[in-house]
Image 1 (cartoon, rainbow over the protein chains, first blue to last red):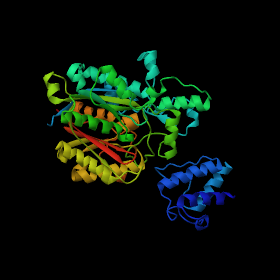
Image 2: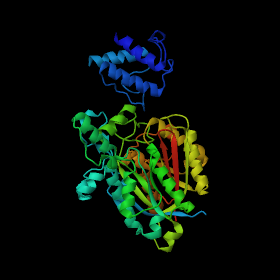
Image 3: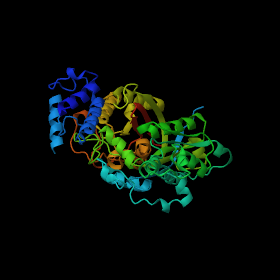
Length: 83
Length: 403
């Protein structure tokens, strides 16, 4: 499974959607992922890729890890994997 | 039958000091007790700071048999209780002993004992643990040890409501004395969660700061855990007066509420109902309140919700009162936090000094109250409140009055 597919599967599971209903340009809010689901997504991503994601729930949009869209999360994970 | 309730003893140990005078001195200086954690496996944690009680040697306070039975949270409780009961001058025999009890708050109880012994059986693969692990780790261990040490034979139990545990405990103690169910109640709370498992669990929520607790500051980035205990002697006013006890202040009122909405996100309405309820219970006009010790965790969610709740309840008076979070100095003691924070309230009433919110860097328009930034302030206040709003949406607010 590609990085993109894995991440979409994780987000889809939290959003209670089929992976095919998750588009790369979707924002997390559009998928119905709230703050608690987001923290679970970050955890699942860390476990799936064995990486550590810099994310603070107090300032979710200010960190180095861009969570604005599905595509931005995929790009950020690719970057962390490369590090 | 309603009685007045007063505080005739106070004791503590926390990151700011080993007793009440040391804690007051630190609060007046605006000293930060938060620093690098010194615990086993700290290098495996992403959060490596806390308000830890440093330089603590259990052997200088307790003997070997006691240590076998006293988790760190119980040790802190006993040290704080020793100071509080010594100040009160009370001893408990006969009818007074039967009519006096202990109600304390804690969230994790003997979490350090659990952590150490899970390590023994899971990590080290041993098949045997010390025989007293259960009486050492149970959440009521501290209450029971206090009751035994001072012969308190009346109503005694532990309250566990996460970050509001101590306030809920003190609220119960207050109502027991007020109603005549008890003459004296030893109350407050204790916490010692600064162990690998204790911090690791909190890390998961992603609400912890890696560098500092900066309540109400626009630059805040989360909470920092602390540890320690605060213990108080709540006494029937007539009883205290008759024996000529020194009275620290009056416990004027208490209220609690439940948000009934979310397991972690706080609600303005729930907080406001508890604050307004405490004023009503104490028959205090809101304009009399000079200081509020805030819950003020330094998280994005709490601080703006709390400020909005205070603004709702107090209206224009919200801009006149002072509100500070001493968690910036001693950290968040979770189940013990309301007890240590009550000390800042007592200091405000008795010494006319308002403890500051340190680490304050930049105003946040959503927290636009007088948060006593960085430097303690001299101010005479007659009525103060202490807020506690727990995960799970359980809120408890205490009102104290000068006497």
